[in-house]
Length: 166
Length: 100
Image 1 (cartoon, rainbow over the protein chains, first blue to last red):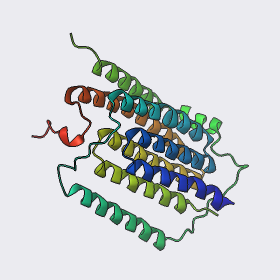
Image 2 (cartoon, helix red, strand yellow):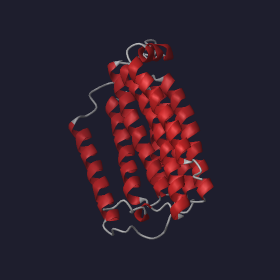
Image 3 (cartoon, rainbow over the protein chains, first blue to last red):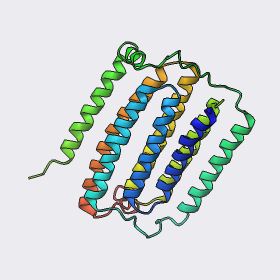
């Protein structure tokens, strides 16, 4: 049962990511990315992180994907350019590098067979939203304030970027 | 029993797909989406280890990563719209005017 609960979202996430990579239409890519984000949010729920589950759905699946779709449709840039890369070695290098990384991951996994079990203890809600909020507003108060400053800076930056120069 | 390593392996696979997206695709929008995918993979690792050690700190960190990602997407897409207005393309190979 555990394996099934993990396996279905994991497979959906990987399929969504690969479909995003291969799809020629940017709108389809954004929608596959949405599928991937939703699957990952289910995994967050399995990892006992309900607060992050909600945040992932609202911020990533809600705001960021909508922003992407909006910009893709605004620009009319659905179609990828068909011309090859300026550097002809880029594609081959990327594929070889990706395969090397995958082999490395497999080696790591073979050398460390899953000996670290995840203690599934649903009664012990160590990361209930209340606990996360307590950590956020006491231990990590300064980073929290800095995060709000980062958001404000981004807001002002976007407004300045789109100012009409007279 | 699903071990933490399974989650780490999944996030590694997603990260590799993100890297492939950044290097293979030509549209700047697709590169952006792949970067988001890589951020998500890293987040998944953090949450998996938070569950492993029963610590809430990693989840707070993921919250900050999501905040910064939102800010990054807003600024990045605004820049992209401005570049598109000027160059009429999202091809990253043509955005080379900063080259020395």
